[in-house]
Length: 133
Image 1 (tube, rainbow, N blue to C red):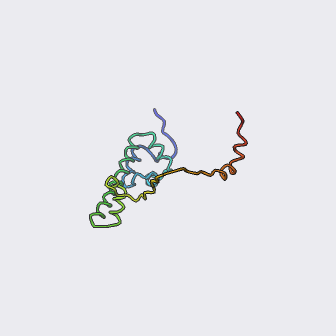
Image 2 (image 1 turned 30 degrees about the horizontal axis):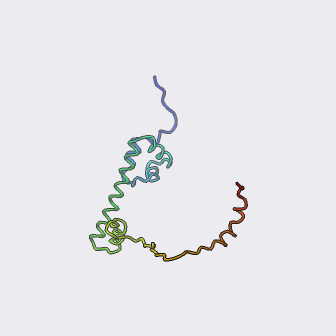
Image 3 (image 1 turned 90 degrees about the horizontal axis):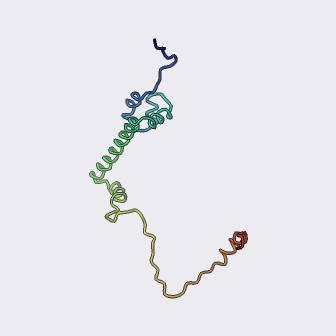
């Protein structure tokens, strides 16, 4: 004869967590809130069980798909700001970017004079502290 466990029933199980994931965007705190358990409970199940980890990842991928669909719709509607944003991120190979080119080429035809007196004064204490060879 097996003993019955006493106390409150377990709030979390792999099955319960898997059932709570849809509609959460894969957000751990949202899954925990649906179940009425602590954030770390869901996190522990995610780390311990491959099925939970994969289900959370799949839910997150659905959100990415939805976000991409929203961007696509806005672009197809002619939204210029969304189009520019998209080109800056996905059109770099075609020359679109928000990055400002700050490189400059300088041609040197002669001598370069470098004055390091101020730098030496600033770091003299460091140089003095070095052991002599």
